[in-house]
Length: 277
Ligand SMILES: C[S@@+](CC[C@H](N)C(=O)[O-])C[C@H]1O[C@@H](n2cnc3c(N)ncnc32)[C@H](O)[C@@H]1O
Image (tube, rainbow, N blue to C red; front, side, top):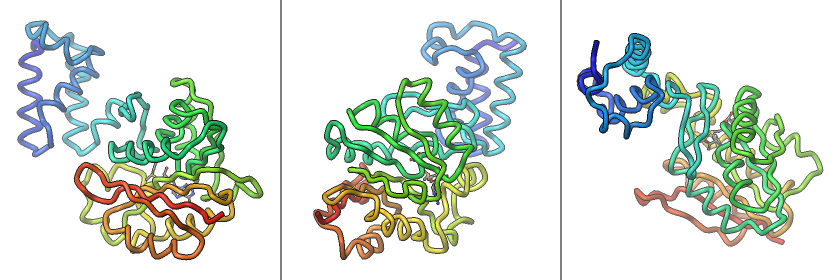
């Protein structure tokens, strides 16, 4: 039998040899998942032996990671805005950059506002906003499987959100909202071959791609937003790499007070625009 220290050393070496990023951290996260223990436990008990069952689970998780499966889909978890969300390959793994979108939305939401999250995926944005503000939250997605994951997360985290299965805003009909927030698919389909295999082979393509130049969903969403937002309402969009200029060009007529938030790497990551009242 192996002890914790040796299991971590061997796992790290295997991951390193396959050029998996952050090999030691990944080995610790996978062993923590296999043992159902916090990572801090390993430092206090390096000599503890793994049970046969834990060893089998750890071996399977390492194998899955070596095959390219993202760690978050192996553990089924991802932290977002200070809370733990359950994730499966039916939803995009929420990214830390998207926390900028949540922050920008919180700054613009007033108590009692109605807020719509379009393309909710795991529900990370809608649930965070429901728990951080006193707004009424609606969230939609075209994927029923994603909505099921989001409903599970809302139940676990105690958030109240109204869920809609909808192609963008079609299910909103004559309803209106004060703030519309979205991290839409924005990867150009022509970039597919160049994506990391963890993203290309595992994350839902419906969550990633938006036509040849990545602009299809922005275009439809911006057109539909002015029908659903109240005059003076805010539209907040996460921006993809190189999408700022084309998105700004789509906002010429009915929008003003266009503001940008840059991410920690200095890229424009969130665009906020106000519907002319
Ligand atoms: C980039 S993911 C964002 C997921 C989640 N909001 C997040 O930030 O982690 C885009 C989401 O939009 C959804 N989606 C794609 N096309 C859609 C459409 N036409 N109508 C509604 N949702 C759509 C996908 O299923 C996916 O959940």
